Image (cartoon, rainbow, N blue to C red; front, side, top):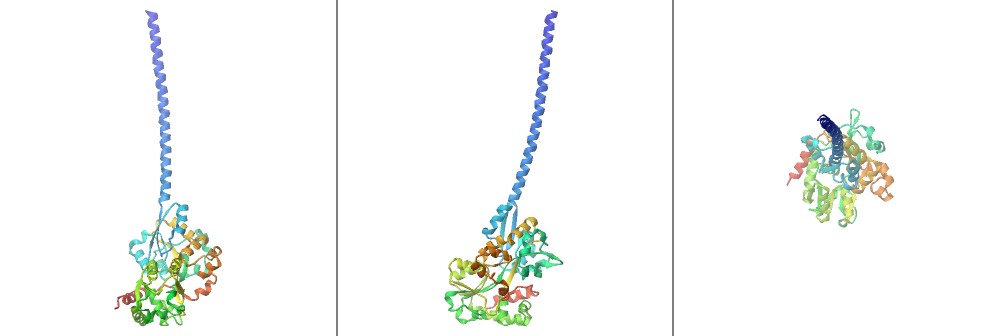
Length: 388
C-alpha cells in the first residue's frame, strides 16, 4: 500500500505543481495582456487627441466683415488650404453699417474688417481694433510709404491696420449714351437725363455735391467738415437732382444690374463695377471729372474682440503680400497697396490700375478723412432721401 500511496502522492504533487505553474503563466500572460491593453489604450487616446487637434485646425473659422470683392475665392481658397481653416465673409454696404455692427454688440462675430479711411480712425479711437505686432508682417515694409505712413490707423505709437487697396469714387457712364466722356459732375443734373441717374446710398454722395458747389476750394478736405449752412446748400442741391434719380444703389451688384438693364446711363460708382461690367462686355466708361473726386484707402484690421487673432494676423500678412495683391486687383480693379505686385502685371494692367504713376493719380483724389460731424452728415443725407 505504501508504494502505491507514494506514487499517488507524487502524481498529485506533480499535478498541483503543473496547475500552479499554469496559473502563474496565465497570470503573467494576463498581466502582459493588461499591460498591452493599457499601452494600446494610451496609444489610442493619443491618436484620438492628435486627430481632434487636426480637426480643430481644419475647423478653425475666420469671420470677415468687408467690402464686396475682398473675399473672392480666387485668392481666399489658397489661404484656407494652407492654413486648414474656413473663411466666412459678410459684406457691408457702407462705412456706417460697419461701425454700427461693431458698436452694436456684433464685434465678437468678426475677426477681420476692412474699414475705409473715413471711419478707420474712429474705430481705432473707440478701441474696436487690436494693435498689430508689425514684426509679424514681413510684407508691411513693401507697402506704399504714402499709405503706410498715414496717421489714419495709428494711435499712441501703435498701428492698428495695414493698407490693403485704394481707389477713387469715379463717374461711371454708358459710353453709348455720350458722344464724349462727361467731364463734370454737373451733367448728372441735366434735365434730359431724367430718371437715368443713380447715386450711392451713402453720405459720400454729399461730398460730390459739395464739390459741384465749390466747397472743396481752396481746401479740398473742407468737404469733410462742412458748416451747417454749407450742408443745407448741399442738401438743396441733391434734392434738385432727385427727378433724375432712378435709384439709390446699395451694393455693387445692384448698380451693375441697373446698367445692364439699361435703367441708367450714369452713376457714382467704384472701379469694381467698371471691372465687372467690362467682363460682361457692357460699354462702360469711367471718368474723374474736372472737379476731381473723392476716394478711399481701405485697411485690414483685426477686431479687438477676435478669438482668432493669430490666424487673423496670418491672413493680413497673406493679403498684403505682392502675389495676393495681384490676385485682388484682378477681381476688384482697385489699386494695390503693395507696389511690388506690379512686377507681376503687364504694362496694360499697370496703366489701368494707375500704377504707372500713382502719385499723379492720387493728386486727383481727395481721400476720405475722419468726419467730425458724421451724425449730422447722415441726418442731411436721410433728409435728402426722404424729400419729395
